[in-house]
Amino acid sequence: MLLDNFIKLLDSFTNMKEIICLQNNQEIIEYYKKHKKPDFFKYFYRLKVNKSDIKEYQQYCNAIICKNNGLSPNKIYKLLHISKRKVEHWFYENNKPIVIHILNYYSELGTPRNKTKWLSLNSTRGGLLTGPWIKVPSKIVSFAQLVEVIGQTQIHKKNDGDLVKDYSIENRFAYLLGFAVGDSSKTGIVRKNKIIRRIQIRLSKGYETNERIGDFVTFCINSLGLRMKKTKDCPAGKCNTNSFYSWMSQSSSFFSWIYNVCLGLKDNELTTYDKIHANWIIKAPVAFRISFLQGLADSDGFVDFSSKQVGIITEPNTDFITKILNSLRINSHKRFFTNNRLWSVMIDYNSAYILPLFNPIIKSYRYKYVEKLYFSTNISGHWPEWLRNEVIKELNKGNRGTQIVKNILENYNIRIGMEGIRRLNLKNEENSLFRH
Image (tube, rainbow, N blue to C red; front, side, top):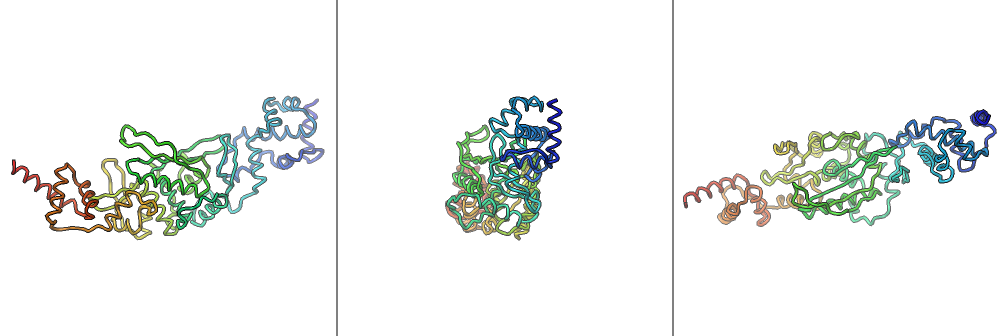
């Protein structure tokens, strides 16, 4: 008899009759009248709702109807065939189902325009979205879309006393994007209703300037209103003699959006093995493209002293990086490393310095190498006697090739070629044999 009365009560509710809702549940009940199977979660970036979530939403709304009409929790759980503990969670601990939380967000935010979706920069471990909220597109096709997204993060960002005011927020984002393609870890964390990511960086303590790189990436992320900080150093591994500087960001759906939308990668893809899909970068402003390359170069770049060239390990995005360099009118060529079987893109050191390929604010050890090459004196042809003697000293110390070029450059600001070292080495060995 009680069940029959309840069915009649639901029918009257569906027809908007004889039901009075509590003030704080009014919007929920009004929405439920029209949407027994809700679809408002489609307005949120990659927020997943399954069948059990929908069922719990329906149970909750029916429980509220019963409560508003005088039924006690003991009667409600029996009537609706749901656990007593669940009803107590709802009524006494205010522990609402996830769909109800999303409905509350939707009620506050409304429907986003221009085919965008709502994204919360922060969330709790339990899955609640705590804002601030921004609107993001599901696909980037133009630089203007990115500018609009980044502009929203600035509304919510605290004033961090920018040390680099001339380096625009768009260029900071570009640097972060390039670095994300390179050496950083973009750990995906699977929650029940969404996938969030965080950025983690480990850089060798073998070069002191690596600490400035990590701090600059942190600065770029903080500029977007997201948290990142330096953490405890990591110990050296079996293959590494140096320990590592370490940084870690907060977890955020925004990093997932960067990964999936800005870089065009699927959840199961990795930047190490899978190509990014970000052709919109090629049409972005020149400064943005350069900042993107700087982030990638500070992560995966190197200076080849033997050929006096600068390179970036670009596998598997060699063709894409070549296109960006072409758009900047920088001549480049591909080179294959037989040791690790990875492709890289090479440019001459003059172009690397003038661009510049490495970030001039950070002034990493690679930047300083390129700067030294650019302003050094080239000695070709016959070397003066003092220089030959210095190279012979280096050879006698057991140094070879690249190390000798670096040492002569560092000590005398002079560029010498590998061929000259090889000729002098052969002659030095011949003289040694003759003496013996």
